[in-house]
Length: 421
Figure 1 (cartoon, rainbow, N blue to C red):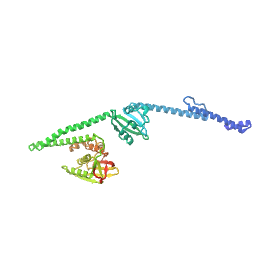
Figure 2: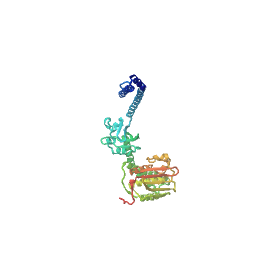
Figure 3: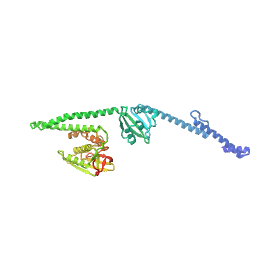
Figure 4: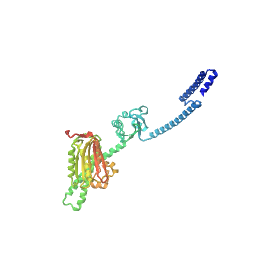
């Protein structure tokens, strides 16, 4: 169209190319004017109406106007959602802190500000670990394992204990949940103190009762009809004594979470002692198979390790049928040292396995009471292993026995050629 008009003007002026140049120059000027108007409107579209135009420019202005309205709609929607999120998190009883990949503060709610002493105007973008300066919390963030939380005791000048639980999201970001657990810790401490004190106070009168029962049992003039109930009383007093001893040992283990250094433990000698002691038990009809497949020894507290291994062996004897074989095995690989006790008992249903190390938890309450168990053995084993940086793994199948495995880290292994300190 523009070319045709240029050709007509050139024919009228008698100069074809001059006419074409004039018409194209005017068209270029018009397009530049439309462009400047469009650019000015884009810069100031909140204050100016869209420019009038037809053809391609009109369609372009229309498309941009629709995009702008759509963007405004989504912006208002996002702002509304964000305000709702802020209102909802402000009413939460727990604190919430959003951290980026560098573990710097991106956002936090009102409760987090209250618990951690954060300030909105100054603390955004700062490292939370640097602000709190708590070694346990710093290690928790650096490790990056958020399957469990971490409890931080009261800081200097403060009286509240805090629990932190990380929740990963996005690409390396973390939501950190913070809550006040002072009351729970106080109740747990009261419970532990009560158990320890009650167990200690019960030990003395129970010792006296057991002594009198033993004296009465030795009396030749005791009527025969009194001997069965007297024997049952003795058996129950022995069971109570065992429970109190286990409670005192568990209270002692729970009093501290510090790692045990200890000395070199001769695994071969320890397993020989365990086998000898269990076979010397009255009425013992099981066979004990000891398999030592690696010469390395273990560094730890001999008394604690022997107590843990004995509890596992004692459980295996109690729950294995008469004449069965119990296997004690020790071996070492790249993951560390491993001690296992495998029995030929009835096995444990899968739903019970996660709770076996809870104190007083029993799979078969009637059978456990008949055998005189305290229900604390596996809880003691778990605490002993935690003090050595180890873990207890239980595998079992109904009707095919159970295996209790103690897995020790490589740092706990010592070559058998190293002399005992």
